[in-house]
Length: 138
Image (cartoon, rainbow, N blue to C red; front, side, top):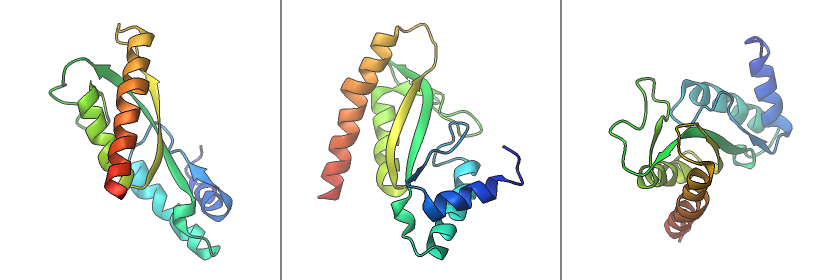
């Protein structure tokens, strides 16, 4: 997207949108999130809306490994991959602190079968995050 039009699109999201998925698999630690979310929130406020009504859902690429990774994020802070417990810890912290409404995992080819990777996501990570977030809310 043309950089000159990005703030306009973000403002439209704030004024009338139900949700936002940061582009380029940007997560809550990225400059894209830090620069973009305030534009959405300000537009929502100017339109008389609660910024919390514009949900943020994150696309999360990366490998889900069987053992913990020494460095789950690269030097720029992008998630590269890690174990189920590392992913659960990341997402459990992001949900309340950065108002994450949801997460979408997209698989990165690393030689692990899709069944194993998606099983780790759907049977281990997602339930553990839901449980931890629910417990934190009570």
